[in-house]
Image (tube, rainbow, N blue to C red):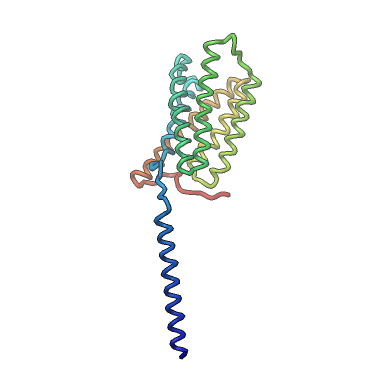
Length: 225
């Protein structure tokens, strides 16, 4: 058989094999179920607002800007907005595939719901639920450590999240000391208000970027790690 004929046969065989492979790949693609996104929007701004608004409301009392009679209002919003709302945002973030956002939102959502129940029982049953100064100090310190762990991750996120978590670490530390010194608690109120305000700013910064295409300071990605 001439060399040219052999070459043509090899080429035809290669073309047939290539076509068969393409058909198999096409059939496999058609048989693969299409994954539908359950969460199409971004729950991040909502979760940040839940955290920021509730934190600022509590700090109105801690800074003594508001009378303690305002506490029942904080209770209600801590349960539904800061607690349940933020927990829902965390679950949606996890479904969406955002491990960091889901873990953080769900954690602080559970924190607010737990805080509501603890403070409510302390106020309504003072004889049964005495204030445990040492325990609350350790409790706030533990949340400071947890928050610092989240802060490490924000070093590869953006300036908004870095500000929120860094100030929250210091706020929890000051609240731990505030169990023994009123001035320390007052300082925690001011810094906590700044932390909550930063979360509100971040929520609108991310919202404006998604809806209006406007990039405010702090939303640009960073990579310090």
